[in-house]
Length: 533
Image (cartoon, rainbow, N blue to C red):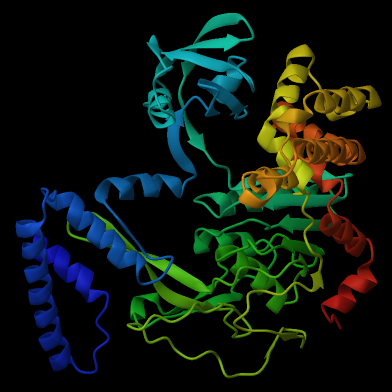
C-alpha cells in the first residue's frame, strides 16, 4: 500500500522528455522517497500514524499542483458525490454559534425541522437528547444535531426565561441550485443561479418555459457569486436559449479523454427573447462558460464586473481503494476560440503553455472580446459595498442581532410593517448601548494609550480624548442611522422571509438589475450593444 501511494504522489510531478528518462528518474525518486519515509518512521520522537501520514502526503501533493486539484479519501468521495446533488448532511436546518457560553440559533432554514417546530433566531439550545451542551464545543454540538435522514432528535430550547422541549425530525440539508425565481411586474423573468448541480438543467428549463408561457418579455439570469459546478448542467441550461447543436465550448487537454467539444443537445425554448446576465468577480468556472458563451454568440448582454477567470476544468480520477483525485484536466475555450483563464504564477515543476498569441477574438456579430482575463461585461457597473466602519462595528457588537431578536419576538415584522417609529427606537437603542460599539479609531486609540509616549500624558488629556471619541461615535450613529436601519431590515427580512425574501429586497436597490430592466425595455439599445444587424 505504501509503495502504491508513493507512486501516486510522485507521478503527479514527472514532466520528462523521454520514456526511458522518465522510468529511470521515477525509480530513483520512489527509492529516495521510500528512504525518507523509513527515516521519519524510525527517527521521529513520537509514533507516526501510517494511514493518516500517507493521507496527509497525498493531500499536500495534490494541492501543490494548483489551487483546484484535490485528493479525497474514500469516505470524503462519498460525501462529495452527495454535494453535487446539493446534499450536505442531515440535520435540523439551523445555524448555531456559541455566544456568551450559550449555543444560540442564528438562522433557521426554510422548511426544515427547526423552522417547522417554530424555533427562531436568538433561541438558546440547552440540551440535545437530554445531554447538556454547556461544556461542549461548537463542533461537538453540531455533531449531536446531525444524524440519519428522517431520524428524530430531542432539543431543549430556552427563549427568554421560558424553556421548551421539542422533537425535531432531521432532514437532508440541500443547497438549491436555483435560489430565486420570479416574474417581476409580470413582465421580466428573474432567475438567480447559485451553482450548477445535478438536475439543475432540467429545473432551469422548466422555469424558463413557465415564464415564457406566462408572457415574459425578457429574462435576467443572475450569476453573481456563482462558483461553478457541473459543466453538463450548464450546457443543459444554455440549451434553453440556443439552437440544438450549438458549440458551447472546447476542452483542450493532453489526455485525449478530456479533449473534446461540447454542444447543446436539446431543442431550445426561445432563441429570441432578450436576456441580461449579471456577473461579478465571484462568477467562476461553469458560470463563466454560461456568461462567456452567451456573450460570444451575442445572445445576451452582460452587466456587472469582470468575472474570476477560471477557464479550467477538473475531472475525477479513481484510485484502487475508491479514493479519488480531483485534478485540473483541461482548459476550456469558448465558441470564439478564446480562453478566459487568468494564469496563476507558474510553479517550477510545471511547464504551462504560453498565453494565446491571437491578439483578438470576435463574437458572432463581430464584436471584439478579450482572452486570458475572465469575462468582461458589456456594461460595467461596480458592486456597492455597505461595509463602512460603523456598519461593521455595530455588527461585531451584536447590537443589531439583539435588536432583531427582540423585534421578532414582539411581532412578526415584515418590510411593509417597518415604520419611522421603529427607526427611532433602533437609534435610541444604539445610542443607549454605544459603549458596546468599538470603532476602528477607538481600537487604535486604546493601543496608543498603552505606548510609552501616550501613557505619560496627564489623565485629564486622556479623558478629554476619550470623551471626544465618544462624541464622534454618537454623531456617527445619528448620521448613519438610515444605513444602519437598512441593514437591520435586511436582518429581519432574512429571518422572516428567508434568502428569497432578502434577495427580492436587495433587488429594489440593485443598480445592475435596474440597468437590466432599462435595457429590456429599450430594444434598440439592447440590439446596438450586441451589434445586432
